[in-house]
Image (cartoon, rainbow, N blue to C red; front, top):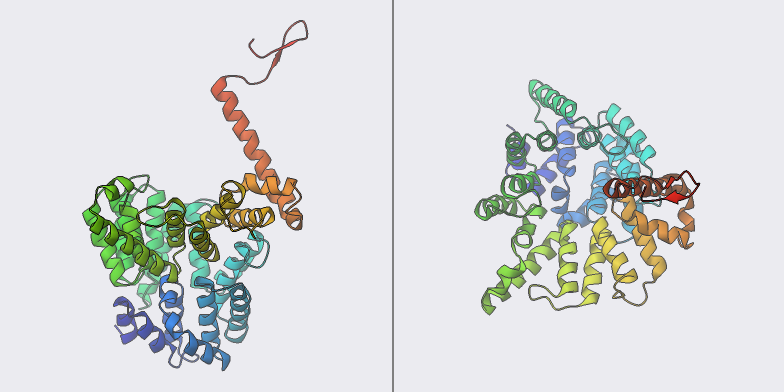
Length: 428
């Protein structure tokens, strides 16, 4: 085992990154480790304090550092300019060094509508091209889509699992280290196939080999019920503590998942203060690491005045907006609700902004289809007319038809039937 491999296994991400960066333009092994590290959002987040140095090297013409700049702006966007920067850097990294992973991540930005409209067809096309070029990220994405049957990919978790096994076996035969994400994907496929114990083994393997996010899924599927409620608190904390040791952003969701109002209300004031501070510190840090669920929690605490947080709609809006910047559809939905339903949003955010947020949430697979159609019928989303007419309006009409059919099945009323005398009788 070489030194870079050991650094990765020890979760010394920054040290591994800079070790791999040495002579990277001429060393294929270093390129492989470098790209493997940057496929994981948790790893990218740990490079934030090196951003100035990475930018300097990128500006000097190093295409691998251009790729790293793109990943930083993709995983932890700071402003609207992050979209432009990451797109330009992904394109430049591909054109100057044929980094196929850059094409694969660029495909995801089109899928999510980062530059305007979501384009699943372009995402599929670019992902296939990148996979044919050998992009590990593109291959992993195609496997993920097959596991879940998403983005125009037929659901086939068993076939995906078999293909992952072949990829891992081939890498081992070639004396290469398989990307640990493959083991996590095997765990995902196991869950879809109902093989929970096998999934836990694969998540544990992924975590042991350098995929820090796998710790969370190991904890979730071993310690939570079907609704995500923690049942085995001791083991849950044990696994999440391991995740915290390697600075996995998901680890800092442990306390929010464990706390509930009845438990908090029974605590002494001193303990309540400690819980409040722990929740704030952990969720703020998780947000800085790019964990999009963390600002959703914080926004909810401020909005409802929970766990020692003052009821402050301005703070709630700030945190939901931070989550929206991280592409969290539930945060976009919360902004919509604050404007349209609760009327608690800052006054400068109007109805038009709400429907734009609803549209963004929908592109990110949020549950805002009805709100988008409502906004379109009010004439507030005309600039999105083509995709709404071609994609979302047919989806809405199909959904309404299915809902009507369900109601008719429940009530037993298929259609009003015509009597012999020509009258319609709903009770015949």
